View 1 (spheres, helix red, strand yellow):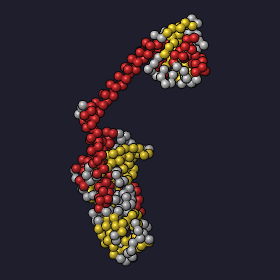
View 2 (cartoon, helix red, strand yellow):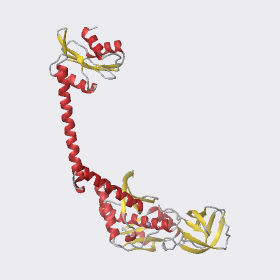
View 3 (tube, protein in one colour):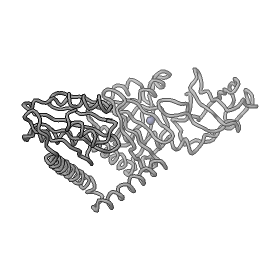
View 4 (tube, helix red, strand yellow):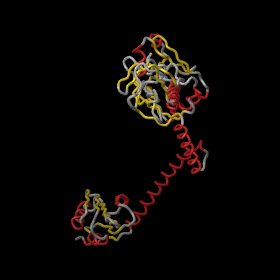
Length: 399
Ligand SMILES: [Zn+2]
């Protein structure tokens, strides 16, 4: 037995004999400190009054690394104090991961254990599953988890022969922890949440699911092929997150003028309406520009009618599309010059108009600078260093 922590997770204070001291590293006759393992971080606390910086499994015993070299020696009796807040948080978070996995058993196909890790603010569980864990599934996982917490299910643990544990197909293996457990003994610790989940696990757990408190799913991602990572929070950060989401939902409900339950539908309707209005606006703008193009001065050249002039207030893309439409609707050649800080020109020419849009733009950029290009039917240029009227004059005079 390396540590009593998984067996008796409620113990926070103990006395033990110092077995070895090597600089800041100390081993004891026995310990209740949990050594980092299987995704659960090392306990914090003090040994003989000295803060414990890290706890790791050694070859023969648990190694406590203190923040400074202790003044006690081998053979001394020392008091160990396991930090209550952090251990309690780890027990709650760890047991919550088993409850979440149990919820996964009820919702996910071909479920396998992908990994687990307790962080300061959140906990992650990796599900190996063929099921696509979308928003709906995440919400259902959270709902079932909190329901199992509320149901106050008993949590018990016992050591069973390794063969017996591996023969059972209802046991989930926390593989990282299991490796450690299986390596030193022929026994495996099974953690049983009454009627909900059985897992082989060497961590510390609460004895009833009601001790976990609210569980809040905070994220989901895909760390690898066939794996879905679900992140959740217990304790204050989970409670804060819940309040944030609730506040946001009520804000949205107020702005949309609908019940919280209908916010999604109302937002979807609003978005569809916005897209429809934008489409109408684009059409109206296009008609407006085409109208302006049709009113441009006509210049007769080589038997074709050129519409040449300044079109303000619109961007080159909108004007360009309208010019193409105008040609498609019967105009011979359209040359529209845009004003503003960066004058541009668009040219559209009908196939039988004996005019080359690209040549017109080249001539203008040669004369006024800027750049651009295009083919015989359509071309555009920008960054012309001239007043729009001067550009128009150049085209009209054909010089
Ligand atoms: Zn566990």
